Amino acid sequence: EVQLLESGGGLVQPGGSLRLSCAASGFTFSSYAMSWVRQAPGKGLEWVSSISGSGGALYAASVKGRFTISRDSSKNTLYLEMNSLRAEDTALYYCAKSVVGTLRGMDVWGQGTSVTVSS
Amino acid sequence: QSALTQPASVSGSPGQSITISCTGTSSDVGGYNYVSWYQQHPGKAPKLMIYDVSNRPSGVSNRFSGSKSGNTASLTISGLQAEDEADYYCSSYTSKNTLVFGGGTTLTVL
Image (cartoon, rainbow over all chains, first blue to last red):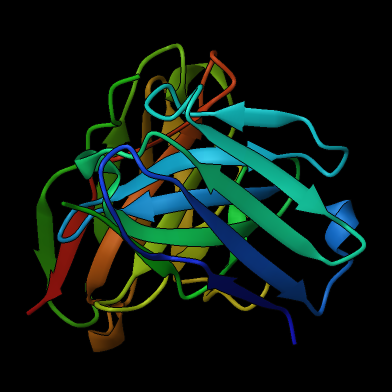
């Protein structure tokens, strides 16, 4: 069964850091681009970052310079390193697998990990 | 990058067809055939319904179809069923090599 399982969320103070992980199973992880998408409470979806199978990274303007996406194919795991966190980064963070290419659609999603930035 | 424009809500009766629009610009929807649609039920993760404007992933009902004309993409759901009641989001690749989502549309099945 194709599955994504996020972890690493929690409560962090403004200016703090957090690293999210996404464990993948049931597919050839290295062959697919992966993404992070977030959803603030009661709000819509917002694309955060994507990484191709070969490691090329893309970022939304709102997180560029603060967040770093990476992947470890030996562990079938996707990461999101988040620094200089702000209140507006508070959201449920989803990990998702691309159906084809990098930004053409995401066909497998995890259940999300919650990040709250507050003092 | 501004969010794509979707109607806040649409509604229809069981068995009817409805269409949700998604309007962008020539730098996103109009410039590329990389529009996707997602269905999200309350408290659940999004589900991919359409990618590359009109392609359905395996397992998605053929009652769901996608199209595009100019800077506006559309999702049509035919033969509405109670289980279709959910939030729907469009997304598009952009000229800045990023992804942008629409604000979301709540579908109510009357």
